[in-house]
Image 1 (cartoon, helix red, strand yellow):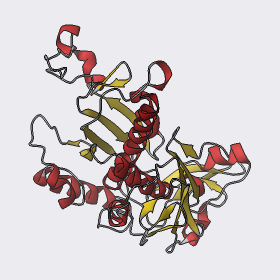
Image 2: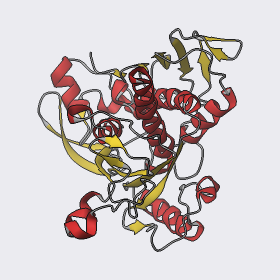
Image 3: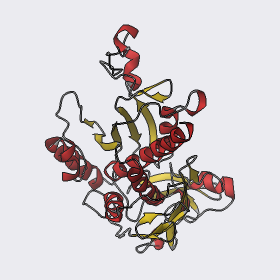
Amino acid sequence: MPGNTFGNIFKLTTFGESHGEAIGGVIDGCPAGICLDFNRIQQELNRRKPGQSSIVTQRKEADEVRFLSGVFEGKTTGTPIGFIIENTNQKSKDYSHIKEVYRPSHADFTYDKKYGFRDYRGGGRASARETACRVVAGAIAKQVIPEIKITAYTKAIGTVVFEADKHQVDFTEIEKNPVRCPDKKLAQTMEAYIKNIRKQGDTIGGIVHCVIENVPLALGEPVFDKLQAEFAKAMLSINAVKGFAYGSGFEGTKLLGSQHNDIFNEDGTTQTNYSGGIQGGISNGMPIYFDVAFKPVATIMQAQASINTNAEKVEIIGKGRHDPCVVPRAIPIVEAMAALVLVDYYLIRKTQL
């Protein structure tokens, strides 16, 4: 099963299933001598872990990471960093009803057809639990490039939208509410909206906005390895992501070229930033920003029509513990994947100097 490794120099390979003994990863290419703040790594995991509020899945996992190699006396050694996160609160019986049934909009059908076998317990390898490994690697990546500030927040839950040009963006408010929206009042509206959707046995999607500041000039490569292309790949690899747009994105199609062009100042900065901090696939020193769209969680607590492994029509109702909306828990995942992209290009750039 290929496709488990991300990166060129700073590489992350993840392993494990949602209901297995543990999940984990191996990070190769991390520079030696990086003094790791293990509390910060755990804090990032705590932002992603289940059971953290009333609007997420109530699966209880400590999500405590244990490092097996590549770290000595608190510093990276330059050798592969191995780590695991034990699964302690699996309830595999919650999935026995889908052993022979394909859930709509899940990976059940495609995995079965590709491999001829699937782990139906929580989706196995397709489970979003795998993203905890990405958060560990991203937390380390952030410490390799501490000057770069990566901040993601909830921009929209369904039709409730935080518009930065109409509201004050206060990054300090993001972690003060369970929705992780920078506007306190709107966060309350979003939270109530999610709770109401959950009461109906349904789910809702949303948008994560990410802002990256203090990005060095000249990260990224032309043609096929453009910086925005790697961001797109990173974000689209996250479970439930359905769309990616950077800079002006689709809204830029409504502007004229004379309106959309970013005019230079004498110091090389630009008067506007419709380019989203990237031109020609290479960072231009301006802040990078992008949106990531997440679909509604596919498991709903309502009866749905489906088929079983014998291609017979059946009815299925979701069971177990699931997020009514993945967006709040996806914030640290988006940041982690952004950090993995940036640290990789940062190290590539160092080899070119």
